[in-house]
Image (tube, rainbow, N blue to C red; front, side, top):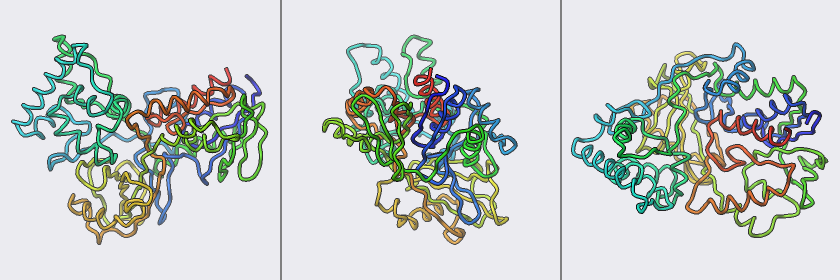
Length: 451
């Protein structure tokens, strides 16, 4: 549809790549982003002259089209980094994802025997159609790994991370979010060859790809470079532009109000990457009460990053490390991936915590606990921390609570009545793509609207 008018709501990587694809197809592109800079969850924040990422976001090369687009946009800013990630487990550091020898070393022998026996029995039971798992994540994890391994490895960490017990999470969470344990796969592959196991459907993590692509200024370089590239090609990029109202006539989206200005959109094609509840709230006339209620049940887990400048040359060997029993769940040291840090002899830590809006972690009053746990892990002492800043993500992770599928379907069915609107991306589709898959979702949405 050459010459189509395309409006994109949200300037994260999904929205940016959708704009790129729209330009390829000859569309006139206008992109609105509520923040002053682009990138969404992949954005960077500058404090004390240093860049801090909102979590770990690095480019992979397994989607060649996306990689080559980003590579060309970033130019010489792109640097290659070998993957090195750890998990702190059983008082020791292991590779992440866990490998076979890590499982053997990290689990006491009797517990290991129980776990492997439970895994074997779970695989045998899964072959009987009458033994179907329940609808919750607890049942799905037990069906996938057996009760002993679930109780030993998954239950407590999942509960602490999400603030929700696995019995109250949907089984879909396991299929879309929970990475497979590569160590366990070795054992399960053997069972499959013996025809004693069925194929698994837990997600494949990007961590099996060993080369990462980063920059000396962190993750901010990728969305900044993409935004610059599409602006040079004629896209109208509008940061600091919060979506206030999306008006419709029951058949099409007719206008979008941004910062008090109404944009005629009756002949536009529209991509929304806004969190689904916010999109539903912005619609005028308002959707039916049952749709509004369904959208309100779609919850997101907030995240707060404690961005620390530390008076040490280095705090850890890995790019990032997962922790199972600390107030934080992941700590990254981007300097180990090539990030430039000033002054000399200093480094930065990205300390990620899931939280709720307004709690101690969100407000920053959990800092003493954060520092105490960092010291216990021998990463840094409180007196090493020169400064700290908070970075918030209110809609970081969709929560697949038990029964969320019906609410999501109700919302999506309602939005489907508007042929000139597609809601996509992590927040807009209420799903768990990695950065590259989110960009692919943006491209596919454009193809559907314009082709």
